[in-house]
Image (tube, rainbow, N blue to C red; front, side, top):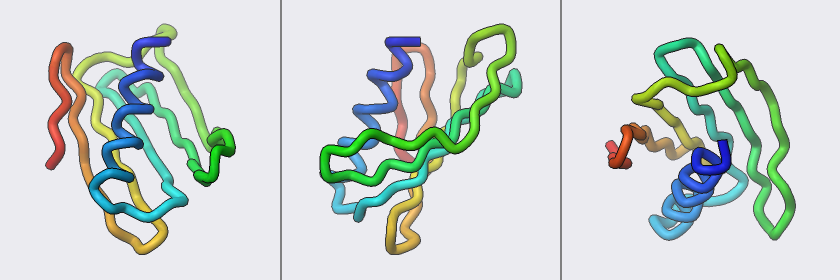
Length: 87
């Protein structure tokens, strides 16, 4: 799960680099039904867990993420074993 946390943190940083405006709402879901929803306020504050459900304690690849920013801009991201793709 630490590796997943690092990948999600990198995704959020990339969204900021691309000009998306905090706060963000991020949802990650996998085909096995695992889901994570987080509100990211920015300003150095920790994210707020909105919802979480884990099947068998893990996310199954591929994982689809959606990040929504303050202005309503959204990006979809696919996480596979060794690749992160922004759509």
